[in-house]
Every structure is written in C-alpha cells, then in structure tokens.
Length: 92
Image (cartoon, rainbow, N blue to C red):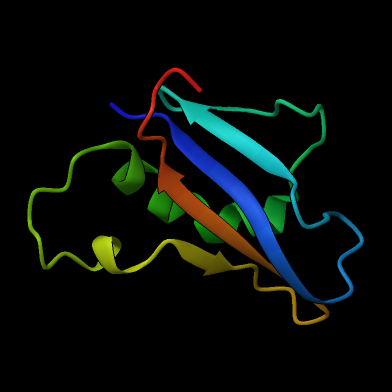
C-alpha cells in the first residue's frame, strides 16, 4: 500500500476551516495531520471514496481514478480544492 498525500491547492470563495497549503498524509488507512491542524468533516466526506483507490494499485489503465488528482469540497461558500495523490518517494 502506498502512502497518500492530501493537500489543499486552491480555495474559491471563503473557507473558514482551511487555507491553501494545509496538508495531511494517509498511511496504512490512518489519516495523519503533520501540521496539527484538523480536517473539515464535510471535505473529508467528499474525498473519502478516493483515498483507498489512491492507496492501492488500480491495475486497469482506463479506471477513472487515474484521470483525477484533484477533488472539490462540496461547500458552496468556500470550495477547497484538494489534491489527493500517492506519495511516490516513500522517504518523504
């Protein structure tokens, strides 16, 4: 299983929970917060379905998960754009 990087790369509007650059790491199915800053439960709900797919090797090349690295929080007032991607260099 790969570690997964989750990072906010853009916010459209006003988000009271997050800032661009906020980040988390998922290791072996556990979400870690290296900056000691929580993640909004609504944003987490939006990206949850993608996390196991990014953590494992999806062999089908035409699988939809290979087409997407960024996912949008559903909050219409502060639409945070999350980049969710496997960590290639496991030393980081």
